[in-house]
Image (cartoon, rainbow over all chains, first blue to last red):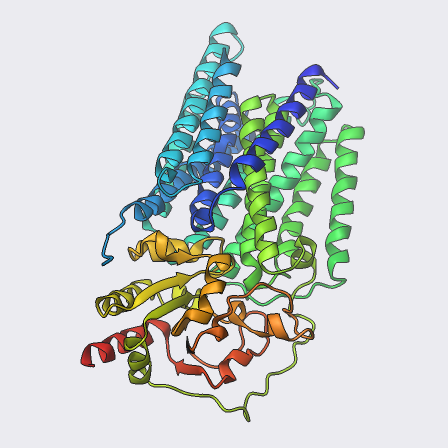
Length: 98
Length: 467
């Protein structure tokens, strides 16, 4: 295995542990926004989509590139927007208690 | 430098996820994560143009990037801004699918780009080819699985578990076939293997989710969420990008934690949820005909609520279906004006995705500090005058506590039967997704109000004003 690949595995394992640490404390109230927010982050694959689209060679590769861009962008734009919409509702907190 | 900027975006994702851990900081957290995504995207754009400048052979097909970004951005924005809060599980399922699909497409683009398909000699190292196969397999399973989940949640596909020929062995066979196709692709350098792999993965996504019942959807969505992250990570290995590896691993871990928590909330292992096809093993037909039920009118319910001191509302999926979150809030406000203390007890798997009920109640302006989770609410029920169960069933079934022969025995429940009076609003005595009878409905202290949740709440509210 190349050093880069091994380094990738190290990064993967460490990041997964950070993920476990950070997420395990989230209260149930926020599980839905957490999931849709995390979902938006998984749209990071847009980085790969940009590279694939930029250097596409031939019609078939261009189709793959456009599709990858479309899918990743739906995930990124939709994910962050809908999470924001939900969290906006959590924020306004009318105090009607007596 | 590029690598450091990807690290920065990874740090922003971590900070963003940490922000999502508390209601006060959640919105900021989401915005920080969005900035992280912007950083990663801009860095990548700079990188590709820089690559093209250094090489005469490369040019950037900028119109392909812009076209894809515009179409995808528009679709995503419209979906996100139009969706009703009750349909959130479907939307998140669909977004998961697109994310997984994008990762698989990136992996495909990578093998097409190296020319293994068009027959040139450019080759990846074996370990990278393994990640190509994993990226395709996981990404495509996430894509097709998510759309089956979407169909089930929308009601296009039956929410009941569908038995497969051979049960779990059918899917095991698909996994073996996928492994064989990958070996063929990698060891024998045969790109066709990747396409066969993808085709089988489409089937596995479908047959993997179809046998799972609608009540188990919170687990399925969490797991698909996790897989979409893992697929992104694998794509990161393919294109040698640590930004993808970090972000994908974070999401994979987040989704996995939720998957475990949801399974625990149903007292079942993940394997049991995925492979057992709960409820397919001929649940005994329910014979409720001879058992007495206290059927109540909205007026009866209004009276018992009006003279209570403490009321706990237990919302379930029926509330979401009936879009009754505003009606329940209005009733609660009317009760609070009569100095009745109203709180809400929310079971972890109430609704169709983790935290779904909390979002609906937040939409109706219910403050989050009166939302109680399982551990907070159960000690309170014995001191509660009236519990108002709105469209929930299995999560309040005392059989889970009392009847060791019950299919749901051992599942943590909200012990609403310990309250002085329990009001159950439900359209009929029909069983919930678990397909089992609920002894709660026949207790002397239980009043059954047979109606649509929204109509019932409005009628109770109207009757309350009359008092």
